[in-house]
Image (cartoon, rainbow, N blue to C red):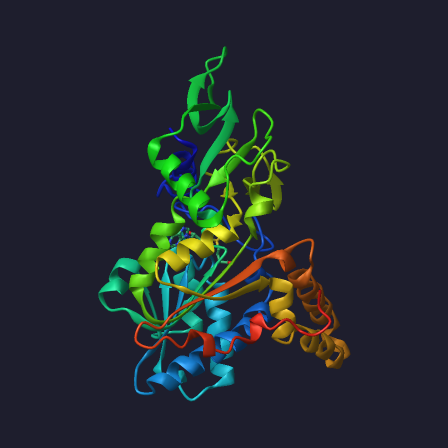
Length: 382
Ligand SMILES: C[S@@+](CC[C@H](N)C(=O)[O-])C[C@H]1O[C@@H](n2cnc3c(N)ncnc32)[C@H](O)[C@@H]1O
């Protein structure tokens, strides 16, 4: 089968997939950490940006209901903490706001239901993008570390051509089943997508002078997803936060083995076929491709920046400073929060994540007027 199909099954098979079975755990005690799983400061900072967008969307139609949607909520930490912070901020529209979660894996959804039962009883619903398309929302949609878990095609340069990589199951001499790599001619459907990337973003796959065996990825599922989300959002903003490189870096001849990694018990590995169904498999996004695909689907690009810039613009520095005011009895918590806050902006780690803000206001093209504090890099930040 193609690697894309393998990744689909390894992550999302309802019985054997890492997410599908609910086996994979997000958090400091799980398989990998994400920004919201390290404490509630990330969600609190993000909530101020979401509130700013919701203020502006509400002002356009003050009597209409508002929605905050998270697609791919994982353990539900981000949704629960953002919801709590928005209630603490208590904006005028809070009574009109609903929390909507979209999760494809039942194993994850049941943990989200537990996590949110206490935090947002009665105000949260789980649904699908298709159902939302029948009654599109006004509000903000967040996709935090979602798209890196979308199955990708793995491509290899061999014998003067790009080829599609696949996974084959055979038996070794001892009769043990083993998975190994194979490759075949690139199907026309993938070649057409690469031709699209060349025409729209000037991306050549492969770039000039790649060595034999050069490997990369193609995210074939992102464009259809952007189209689906566009149908689910009548008016509002979408924030995508994820690992991402611009095209020049992504499709560079020097990036010999692409960006795919497997995560298990806080360890990253390039053994993508090992322990299938027990590990998270992730690939970075290509920013140029994502932005071009989003525009193609009717989204307007509000802007994009690094997480470090976004969080500092939203007040991470002040939050760090205010930890000094905590009483001595709270020293252990203060030190833990300090460490988490520094990790969120670490340029060698989570600080390099991209925040990509897109909007859709079909009735009134007012995106350029939309204020987005997170996209205004604080002075002196580089
Ligand atoms: C890496 S986790 C991110 C969790 C959370 N957003 C965070 O940052 O802590 C990815 C989540 O997306 C879910 N997921 C993956 N593909 C999805 C899809 N197509 N639609 C909805 N959820 C999806 C997974 O089951 C999981 O809950």
